[in-house]
Length: 371
Image 1 (cartoon, helix red, strand yellow):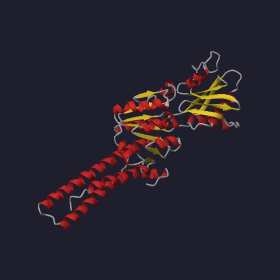
Image 2 (cartoon, helix red, strand yellow):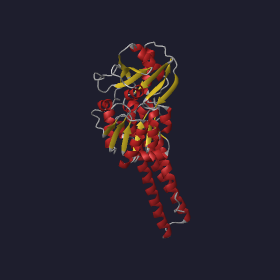
Image 3 (cartoon, one colour):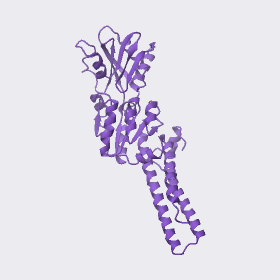
Image 4 (cartoon, one colour):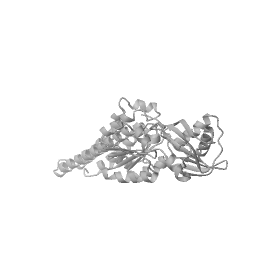
């Protein structure tokens, strides 16, 4: 009667489901017990930049141009083509053009290269919009091209190159500020056992270095294509389980390759949310810390429940073998043990992440999630 494996069968799933529920109360949707357990073992964190470490709402600071094409036309061509992209920078360009009252034609023959740029036709003109290197590689760069001298551009600015009919016509200079509290979040993750934190971005190295100055990252990998992000994730596995955090279509392959992929679901792309193991339902990257804390505490509670339950069952078996328990007493004792391990496993519903500081479940309610 007392030799049944009920403590093992009941304690682990109850604790894991309770942990999933608790994480969801803080806006962290974990897709199953497997990702929850994997989160508890994470040692390396890789962050995308745009829309993840930064606010994801870039704004146009200036338009650098020369030649016959006016600034407003550069913006109009770029915005018209970028209507086909869901990248935060592309959407910001479209929003800026609409804010100026520009009527944007529908682009045709569009092809998007995730993390690099977009090519297509706008009103019969061949248009390319994307990173400076991406556009220059397709149209070449001549000495009289506009935007050839970018030495006056402020460090940390995001440059979006625009080419029309095979010639570079200018650059949109954009600024995307760092999220509030990013430094505190990274410091908290290190205190919670994350030994290595990296930035992976498709932007220029000088932009990435400027944005991350003072954050104390272990490395900055800039100018990466989506497949290079995947290679980075795979290479970092030698240091332990890897978590990748991103929000765009270009991040989806890396999210799928990581031990735990985390998508910014509030404003991120559907592809990244589908590929990820964890989705942040609120637009706050600082929920990663509470998610990891909950995962580790849940795993610890599950192990405690199993060891306590099996230990009590072993003691019951010894007592029964020595004749100190009748079958009825053994059956009742086993039920008491089962109830005890279930109640202990349910403690996962009361985990209070320290990474939230003064935050508490009431703040989760204010974000739209029941506590």
